[in-house]
Amino acid sequence: MKAFRNALYQFAWQSTFAEAWAEAYYRRKRAEGKSHSMAVRALANGWVRIIQAMWLQRLPYAASTFLAAQQAHAGQVA
Image (tube, rainbow, N blue to C red; front, side, top):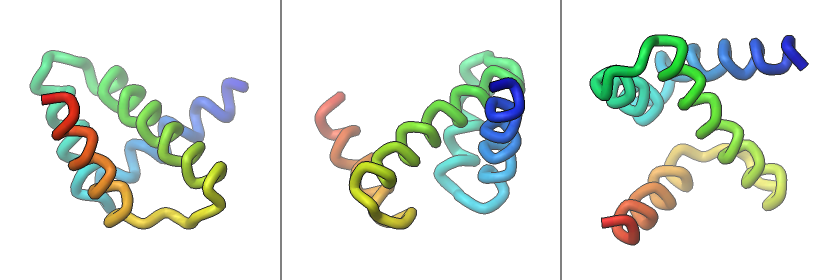
């Protein structure tokens, strides 16, 4: 299980270089006072939710789909 957690952690960190929303999320967590490790773990948890949704819906990852869902959710939270 430790290897899986490490893989998710590394995946989340590397995603900050490829996905603008992931970098923004990481920076927001750091601005909240979270350590690097805490911010990456929080991002990894977000990725787990995305991966689970992809698995259940049998769909490939699409940043546009994620961003649309994120916008819809933001409107409900506010």
